[in-house]
Amino acid sequence: MEKFSDINDALEEKNYLIVFDDMWRDEDWAKLQLYLPVKQNQECKVLVTTRNDDVSKKLQRIAPPHKVKLLDEVKSLDLFLKVVCQSSDGMEASLNKGQMKVLTKKIVSKCGGLTQAIADLGYFLSKEETTCHGWSNPVG
Image (cartoon, rainbow, N blue to C red; front, top):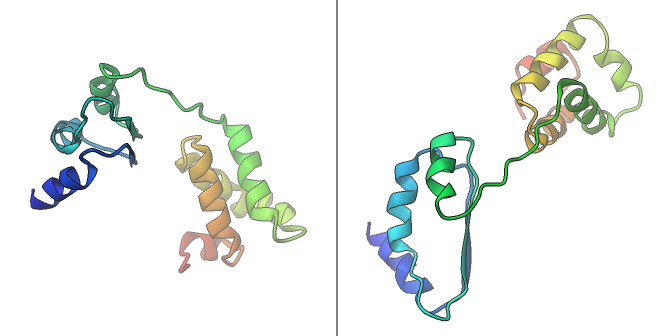
């Protein structure tokens, strides 16, 4: 916990914004907030992102959560194809055939409608060989 006390010392008397991205356990927040000093006249903000409802419920006592709107299957696939196909003409036609169509839908469904996940994965796969083998075993 020595490093956390270093953070506490560095933040003392300063305004700050800290982002904790993708917090998985609600007990992590309980530990972290002990090391975030807030003095009078200090402007301090903490942004926490999570996919865990327990974390969201615990933080709801502090501020209301903002729920990200998820894309439906059609919009998810549209976004994925836009990202993947931006670097190659005619790629969309090959992705809408046979096994590639099935694999593309399977890949997009794993993103759960999360816009950033779809865009990131689409960008990553746009650099790979556009085959079932290339997308099933990317080396990136």
